[in-house]
Length: 248
Image 1 (cartoon, rainbow, N blue to C red):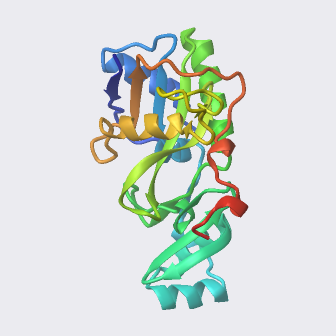
Image 2 (cartoon, rainbow, N blue to C red):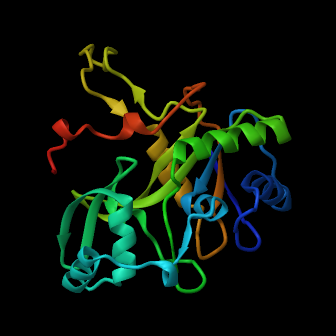
């Protein structure tokens, strides 16, 4: 049986806070424990805040391109400047919506630049290297708590072919993000050729049902799912190569 256990975190997160200590303290305050084989799903926002990825807009000087695009799409020029800096490529810009490819390779709105649930005139950027963030967090929790848990760092993305948004994995550690069924056979004996399940995204989406930024629940424990462990893992296998992306 799979369980999803919400973990409420008291107070805001800011550098130089140690996120592993915050998570372990919150788990204890919620009368829970981390067990071997658990998956800790953590919202990107708290990871970014702990790593100092919060930018005061007062310190942002917009470029001419940022000013022009902000005027065309109804954006704050300072936020537009951050979007451009965080983007490897702007893919679509229409009706006030900016879709870009981040320097990580993610395709999302506004390059992940976010102003929600943050105090003051500021914006939060995605972690510089979410996989590294996940790996460091996993190692620290193993050292302090003595438990082997996988880590999934998540953010909320839209999708080009569906309405609504869903949580997706942007950083992983200790878990193979994709379970491949290629080469196996279905119930009628046919060999499967393309079936690969994005388990990290599915765990992220399932955990989101128990999480809530406004409710102070940026962490959830997923327990009971038998995932494929990985000594070294990354979200890169989840990113579809450009030559196979029919939506670009």
